Length: 213
Image (cartoon, rainbow, N blue to C red; front, side, top):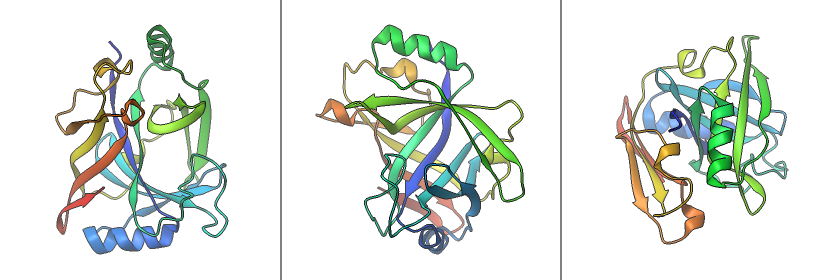
């Protein structure tokens, strides 16, 4: 059994300023600017609870977004469900479990970004592969020992009500890889390629319950 927990949920949009404005209008909460990623995106964040946060991500250049699966490059003018991350405390154990189940995955990668206050966050990531390409639906993360989790350094005020995720019975990425969290609502899908994809989310906010997806 692999122990994972919800780490963060990602909403995409073509323009970060627009995303922050739209989120504030809907929720009454200002997202905190996070930082820039080396693959051409940047983000803004808020805490959902200790250990879980929300990330809004957009291309640094909305006119010419980078050609990468990590960028919401479809030009979407509205916030949409883009991906989600599960946290593990042992990437080595996770690797072994994925290999034993015959699930295609990327090598473990290392990443980091500098926050606006100059701190450096570091992490390890592992992506599942679909058609040979990495996917954010979901991906796995292990934070660096000296990194302050973003949920502890970003604005509070919202909480997670539920997450809707696709479920295809018999898929090799079975329940042992997912958190046992009552807020994850499994929606059966007819296409195995939709298994594990985050398609909806509800948040409790200062302006009440809001829904994405």
